[in-house]
Length: 274
Image (cartoon, rainbow, N blue to C red):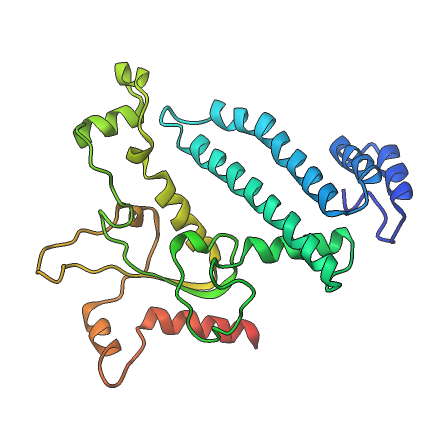
């Protein structure tokens, strides 16, 4: 479509006419241009109404598609539904914050300002809102990294039983796994949310997406009492370069020598900059 339309700036009416007349343009872009033409002035109430309508439209049309293509455990459907609830909450936060900024005179009334404020609210850490004084290392809970974009992320505690954190159940793990797979007669049973570790996968996925240039994942192998700790099964979905025991010892020695994989990660960033 980029090749089919002009590169020059145009008014909304001109864009609509060009898109509507060009057979190479997907009709959804024409519909979107028409929707933009009727979009109201960005008052706080209008912003909340417009964005709520968008979220509710996805809830009505998108969620059923996710469920139709989902496994019997409905893990993706559960994740999609959590995202809808999360975005609805953010829309209401945006409405109040936008109204406050307009009253203070610190923000222009425009949809561009709404977009910038939306991104700010979505990436703020609870309790640390609008503060950017952590210039070196900042510590986040895994559920606070959604939509963040930072150069390097160190994800700690990838130990089975902690991430994911399993819920006690009278149903044996083997039967839980069979119900989640939905094979045979077990497919008629509904799995419990706590069995699917869906929320933990969501948080790990958010953590991976937040890392712009490099990601390090760590775990401990023993408790303070000397009990063995097994790696998180979520690690099975990652392709990692394992740091050797000798490299780990050198890392915490007085020389503090970085492991080769970490040095390579940093060298690649320097190369990209040059």
